Structures are given as structure tokens and as C-alpha cells.
Length: 87
Image (cartoon, rainbow, N blue to C red):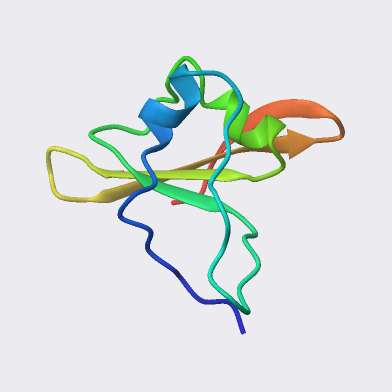
């Protein structure tokens, strides 16, 4: 069953600026299927594509001014990068 594992040392914005994205080793018995990132808005950052390039969909979530949670997923679709709304 899928589970959410929080890594306080994983900072997508910082780690994608420097080049290739590498989330580091997963805890024993865990396989990383996607990366979740809390942000101030759901607009992808300049280098977010590097997460997808590394083989992980990137789920970005943020709360809007009304407190509603907004979710966007940056992923590959038929070899093309796409952003889809998941809210």
C-alpha cells in the first residue's frame, strides 16, 4: 500500500538549481514513486522539469488565498512534459 514518507532534508527548489535532481537513497523497504512539494503557489519553478527527468512525477501543492488546497502534477505523458491539475 502506498505511503507518504517525509524527508526533511529534501528541498526540490534547491536541489534542482544545481543540475540533476537526486532525492538520495530511500529508507529500507521503500520505493520512491513520486515527489511531493509544498509551495506558496502551484506554478512550476524553472528547473522542476529535472525531477521528472530523473524519473519522478512532481506533485506541487499550495493553499490559495481562500485556504483551498491547489494541486498540480508535472509529469511525462507520451514522452512530453505536461502539467495537470489534480484538484
